[in-house]
Image (cartoon, rainbow, N blue to C red; front, top):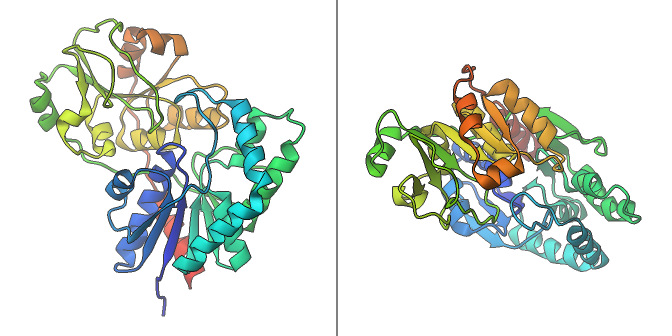
Length: 361
């Protein structure tokens, strides 16, 4: 008889997109196997993690990967990232010993990593079955940014060994190509379905039925937004993260709405202004919410993400200059008149849960 036991989730703190991929899978696993142990290791804020995964038993505060060093939500610091990987891998055995200690203390039956390779390497040392789940991997991302780095192969070697040590690397649609991995298995999209609360939001913000509300979200990355100089667009209001610099009656801090899930805001707004990212694109497409996205040509995931979004949703691309200056009137109008299409379905959740159950047997 199948017995679901202790699942240990290692979660990257590089933005909220990794949490957006893992949370629906873990929540579905817990629904099918309630009252079982769930441990999450991450550097993300505990309040954010518990809001997405309310059934977590224990949170271990510990960074098992850093992804890339970022100047802001859109700008990768390539030299700083290479330097950080050199430092990390020079002291690889010490980091690995630390992670092994955490796993020995937790005694999990299965590891799910999105996508800390250090945790996968530790699981291999301890002979704990492990699943990797992500639309990218840090080895291929680093190679895309620094293909001419003389020590690239040396830096990527432990990453690739760890990723390939997993029983399977689940790649939810849409994922970047991963030619360096031998264990990839494609699955459907992963995203949370929220509830539109537009009447309540309109009432709280004092909006009329004919006014347009655009949500601005950059997936957990630091980026100081200043909308003070943005041109006013007739009938358009902006719903923004806390700390946005604008004292205007058409700009609303979303904290005024109380503790509402981000996915409910995506489901409630007329459009979503964001950067290319898995969670943002898939959750918008699952709700049929049109997307304005800022170009990010250097990000290795961007081509595949954009193609998928334009196929499964309504989307309009913005230049960095348009975004910085707030010249969004024309692209927003063009976006809102695009014909609606059938919303995407997050079929990858059930597929991922099936893999977890298979490996726990």
